[in-house]
Figure 1 (cartoon, rainbow, N blue to C red):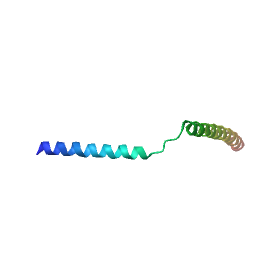
Figure 2: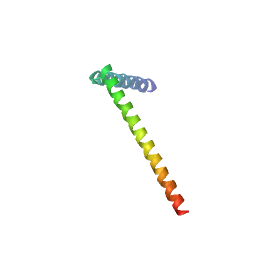
Figure 3: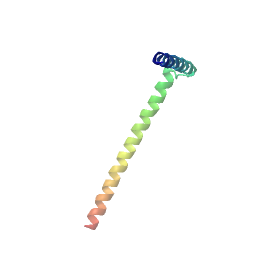
Length: 72
C-alpha cells in the first residue's frame, strides 16, 4: 500500500514536471535589446519621479514651516 502511494506520487510529480517544461517552451522570452530598453526606461522613470517627489517634499516643507511660523 505504501509502495503504491509513493509510486503514484513519483508518477504525478513526473507528469507535472513534464507539463511545466511544455509550458516553458511556449514562453516568448525578451531579447537582450528589449530588456536593455525597458531597463533604461524604468531607470529614467524612477529618477524622474524621485526628483519630482523630492522637490514636492521640499516645497511642502517650506509651506508647512511658513504656516507654522504664521500661526505660532
